[in-house]
Amino acid sequence: MSVATVDPNDLPEDGERTAPALARWGGSLLVVLGAHALVAVGALSWHVAMEEAPAMPPAVMLDLPPMPETPAAEPPPTLESMLPEPELPPEPVIEPEPEPEPIPEIAPEPPPPVPAEVTLPEPPPKPKPKPKEEPKPKPKAEPPKPRPQPQAPPKPVTEAPANAAPATAPPAGAPAQAAPVPRNSNALPTWHGAVLGHLERYKRYPRIAQMRRQQGVPQVHITLDRQGRVLAVRLHKGSGFEALDEETIALVERASPLPAPPPDVAQDRMELVVPVQYFLR
Image 1: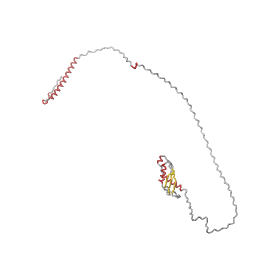
Image 2: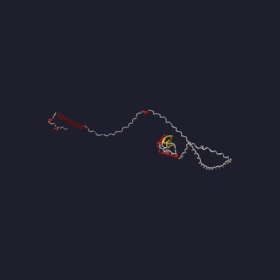
Image 3: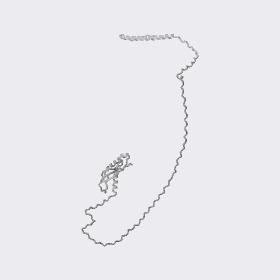
Image 4: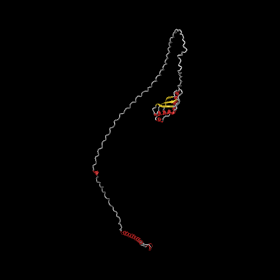
């Protein structure tokens, strides 16, 4: 057992010995003393118990017979085992399906007889027609010659008065007839071709008509003067498509003036009908 010692140097000096300091140091001393006392009491009680415990006797080995096996108790019957088993209906007897009757084999039809190729003979060449014999001209019957008539005696010639005018002379005031002006037979067709060629250079195929694959030949009636200037234009015969008809009238107005008429034409105004072709290639 150890006794707690207090170092006098640790004690507070006289100036420091106040009431709170004394209480703190006194409490600490009591705690230390109590702890040492508990340790001493525990050590003494453990030592006394060790001395009083008796020594254990030596062990004895005994051979015991095996215990008889007890049969396992049968479990009590359950409710399901007490109920009678339900009778299962007999399985239906499945009758075997009757075997299908064998389909009689149909003999293939014989192929139709192939007609033999018949080579037609070439037609005989037609006989050349014989040239018709020209009928020989019949000899013309000569008209009967007139018989000579007996000449009458000459009449006496009477002189006409000097102031008598000839009956066949035309009147003095009648105008003389003008001779017809000769015309060139190739002038008008040549001029028509020149007009068509001139319009062809200014022709435009409408785009909407190309997309719709529209084709036709509209005809226009054109009135022009001696210099080829277009005075009037109108549709003479439509093509059945509005786009082509409108473009044809605009074409004539755009191509004015046209080639002038030939000098053989005496009229101051010329009217002609011109076809304009629109075809897609």
